[in-house]
Image (tube, rainbow, N blue to C red; front, side):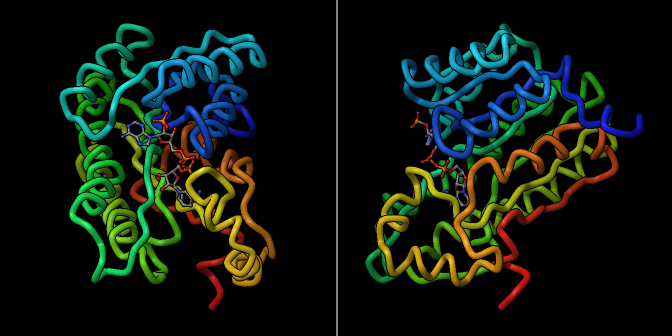
Length: 257
Ligand code: NDP
């Protein structure tokens, strides 16, 4: 397949975790606009269903919502069973759900460490393991992690978050090693700084916000729409020979000191 047709997602199905708001929501909207049937996901049923009906209203395409806690392996299994009932094994799994916790390392709590590891990392393992079985049986699939520039750049008070995002880079390469022989591609997108609920305290801190603008060669915070092109590419036939990679979408932040 060549040309723009390679980017067309018509007939494809997708689950985007954590798409009830923020980056995940925009990514779900972007996949639906590119032709995919999408499942919106989060923990709050009303919120997820509301986003699904808004996407359906804009695209005219049936859009579902499924709710489960990604930190609970049994809930992930039950949630994916519901996804399979609605759309079968998704063609595209976007592991986006994540949280942030900030504190200097000497004050960092066990609870915050556990929340980060379970939400940002263990969930990616549970979801990828559960969905890959169906993808292997079908002989195709795209698994895309949402990592972070913090997999490459350290900052004070977020060592634990950085560790989870760094691990995702290697986990994605491991998925490639296991799944490429089955026609499945696993890649990651590493965003720079984007204005969402997760970063709201940073956006509202004018000193930090100015630092982001100065440190980013593009001179601004990311808009969640900036991530859609990379995701559509990594979800589509256009990336069938791209595997195990992390694509930084950060306005140049990790390219320049
Ligand atoms: P938000 O806080 O805006 O959204 C997080 C989403 O994850 C929500 O939909 C939330 O759903 C869901 N979620 C969180 N915990 C769980 C859970 N235990 N089970 C199920 N769903 C859960 O964050 P962003 O959109 O900013 O971040 C999305 C991803 O992008 C994260 O992985 C983050 O690390 C990454 N990222 C963000 C950057 C940024 O600048 N914003 C930069 C780099 C990476 P609900 O509330 O309904 O439960």
